[in-house]
Length: 381
Image (tube, rainbow, N blue to C red; front, side):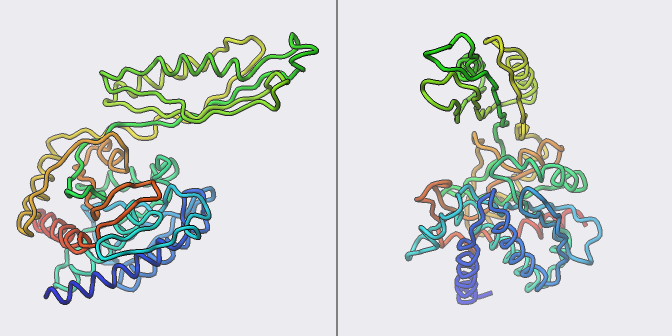
């Protein structure tokens, strides 16, 4: 395929990226996520794929995409359709671009990856390779909040697969990700007793005071040297400054390096939140460990070598790294299959108003994904 052909494909990819970036699809905007799913589903149907819609009530629908002639696909590709941005963001700053970069909510994380994945499959079809039949694609709707509703779906198909290719975006150096810290989300609600803080404070039981005790104890679980971090990132409560607070809440984020740390951290958090410090208040804890750690192992090392070899054939030397953030690669890795992450296009500043996509990375990353799919398929035949 000529460079002119690829230039035309790059232009076509950008048009599709613009279209889906301009669909409001924050995790909690179900209607928008479903619009993105409908658009992507139609594009896959156009190239002969079967699209199974997994209906969700609280979140956007998930898609499971395979070719009708697929027998037992060994390659699982995962890309998420949701973004972190609240409703109204697209109206404030829709898709835009200059000569080098494209901008807009979710353009880098990870709507561009949706389109490079589609075009990798189309490329395989155009070159006459049947390896696209060895692929199952999951497009999920809640990765940005820990894949709570899609985790079981991912685990189900990961157990049927041999390789997981996670098309999260990469940094400007194209670095692959082979390790990630584990993480969890907890939601603590405290109920107290309201009373006038001047007239009869003795009748009140402060939910905020109880929460303060819990915050100190939770933060004390952090062990930076061991890679364990607990962060009470959002708090709220009370009704007025002269009222003993009848309610309070906290949203808690946790990170860890190992499975054993995850289990111990979960036990400790539940123990802390099982009893009150302020008599007369009560506690309710929800949530848990949402992502087990993604740990580099021999299977991943082997898959990494293949990806690096294919990249070299395309003229690029790629390295790998471990990062602190989580992705669906945490889930596939924990199931026990070889997992490589960050196979999407280059860019940076994810989750911010300055998020950007490196346009010239679209074609190379499309080619790389296609070559890896073909190499893995031929390897197993």
